[in-house]
Length: 262
Image (cartoon, rainbow, N blue to C red; front, side):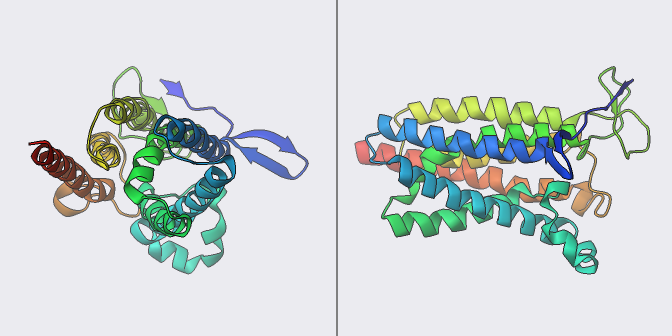
């Protein structure tokens, strides 16, 4: 068996601790900035360095606030109601992708409208950074030893700290690969194709929904929730609609695009 022994803190300066998890978020937002700058030039959009910084900062704020609020509401509302000061302890983990996505959409609607930018064209650009942030975030989860998988007798099973001592799937790495590497590749390929506006964004939404739904079969459900409707996990219940919506919108967009060309 392999034992997880990675220190979640990569630097200590006196009482200050700098964690890998927080660093992953910073790297993800930096990736969004550079992708926005490079891809906007390719598409002939006038996105200055200052405007790109404003966009990434605003959406990043929405992701963090939405991710935290989403985790509290979807996964452990009663506990945070009893421990309200823990709401601010983001460094301890406890972020929801689905909440972060909603936060990103709300903040994007605000900043795009304020700056006079087309929502769908910008969404097609920025969603290309999504898989990078997701992949890095899952690596952060792995380093923290959290969100581990179900028990396995496979040789790759790993014993995580604060678990029951049984070997488990390193499901964080499965997600880092599928939601990060594979989804990034798919989204980048679609972005290079001649497709209707919004296709890249909806591909990201549908792709994430599919990969997250599949990995949840290997991931241990949250202790406070367990298995829910029909034996599904909360992650599956939130992700399956994303898959159907994403696929449906891609199909609708392609059909409309073909009709216009016809």
